[in-house]
Image (tube, rainbow, N blue to C red; front, side):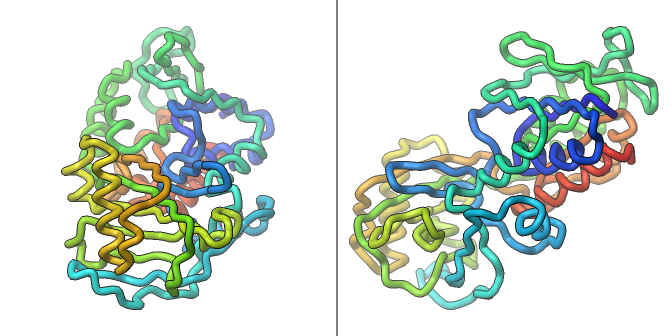
Length: 358
């Protein structure tokens, strides 16, 4: 397959594009991404001297292929490791040691988006940012609409919101979260019974939402941990991490906290006034850490992630069958684990399947 289209520029898409480009020398890869950034929920922002990962917090070393990719295949310049442990807290806000301090918690001095930037940077892929795909279409060799069974010679096109058509592609990779992928396929111009089966399977993947507050303070915290995680799922806050534990992210003597609300709290307050949400999460943070100064941050930021964490994987049967028509699904929800390393590993796998036609 020489013409490959990818919808979404998340970590899985970047890994797949990297494998295809290096394995199929004449491959022509086109990526269409609705946002202005790369790497999906592994997102980084900057504010003055601050750099912070406000979606995924770090990359774990739980997959050997991903470890090799990050530490050997790609340039590891600027790779940093938050060495402090992760502690726990419960509904009563009791903080306790509780997570293995030896596992890697990787980011980069310039943030986690470096993963996708470095992967795409090693390819000749054309990346269209701020381009939202609205229509997916299966076409025959003449460009007419095609039912699209296995080995029928059909190809894929996508139309964006500006009316431009991208393709045709021998293979189409879909990287958005499961609900958005289901929406694309639900309205796809693809007359094949498999389409409805895919929509049903993908639509069954449930997600947890995360509403995130970023809180900056002009003083340092004297605590022994990198982060706190709520273990009983009974608190409004699910996670608090310290960006100053990542080299190059926060100036000395300052604190930058990434506070992620629980799924229940996030869902209940997702559309509330952001300033009120930030204030509420800052107050919770002050209570959990026992430091009243934290209720009054000097500067804040926020982000809602409606489709943050898949709560399970997709039925593999329809996903495997779709490959016969040159349609590939990828991402953490396909891997069945809402982790950055899982998305990357799935992207490597999908890239190999596309490259070798398996």
